Length: 408
Image 1 (tube, rainbow, N blue to C red):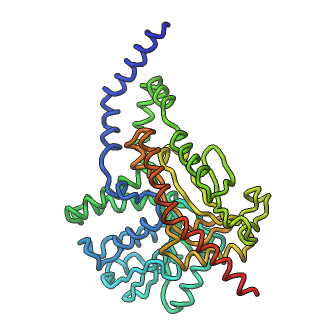
Image 2 (image 1 turned 45 degrees about the vertical axis):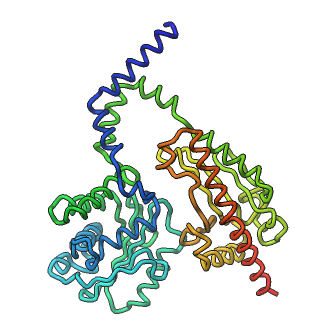
Image 3 (image 1 turned 180 degrees about the vertical axis):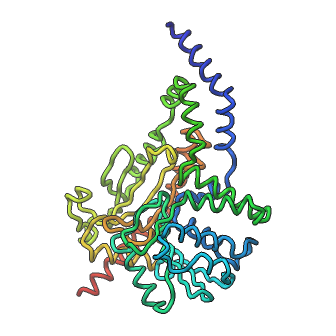
């Protein structure tokens, strides 16, 4: 087949794909505006927890009263053997949930719900992209049992796939069932127009990014079988993010106060030169992370995951240095929330992110060509270099110096 004939053939296959009514249906569903995607609230655990706290609180102005809380508690209890349930479903149905109080980040617990009328305390540990730290669930359980010894306790471990907790008293609950529950609220005339719209947007976002949409997956498989050659051609031409990542790598290399560290095809690490002579900041075992032995490294990273193919993030990460150094750095950063934005709680057992931001968000990157993406990255880097970097460099040195003074 000649080159012209091959071009004509692939053009026809692409046209057939675009004309397919099932493809048009998927395009309408995937291309529809979504409030939570626009706000960048897709995989951030804090934002999901904030939304759940809003929705589950009977006193908030969503107009749903205690109905979301009732349905969530029944959903959680359904995952437990009857003999293990701290409260019966009938008690919830006839009980008064209107006075329930929702606490966020109480003793680092994602959500703590006090229902005094039912003498019930509900702990919800929410994990969207990370796993629970070693001993984390047990530690939270002990805190609740110590603080509320006379109350009944319901411990919920909420994850995208209903991952089994390492504490038997916790009940595993998944985001797929949560999405169904919220969808029911949105469609059953329980919610007003505005609240119903928000709930539907949240469910759509969950099914696009957090849990599988089985109907959409089945439709996509059928389409691929019908138009395999067209899809293969599209995937072959898909941008891989290399151009704007290379632009970011060049910016790091051209910044005189930086020292390059680990570099791979998807990430580039660096540290301020002011850190290179500080013992505590270079105390990591060279066989565990970087060959330079850095205790903390800035990482600029792009992603191969198709859901984040345009995203470019920047983070300050503490590595597997000695525990005493890791804890001091993490606590020092945690005590400066105005500066160490994006700190991830709790501190991980091996790695801990104490600062994070996007140089290019996925939502923005999808709308640009490579040249525009590179320009946005360049501008974001300039802001970071002029505003955050000097303060972060100084703060880390102050944290280390204070620790050394205490030891002396």
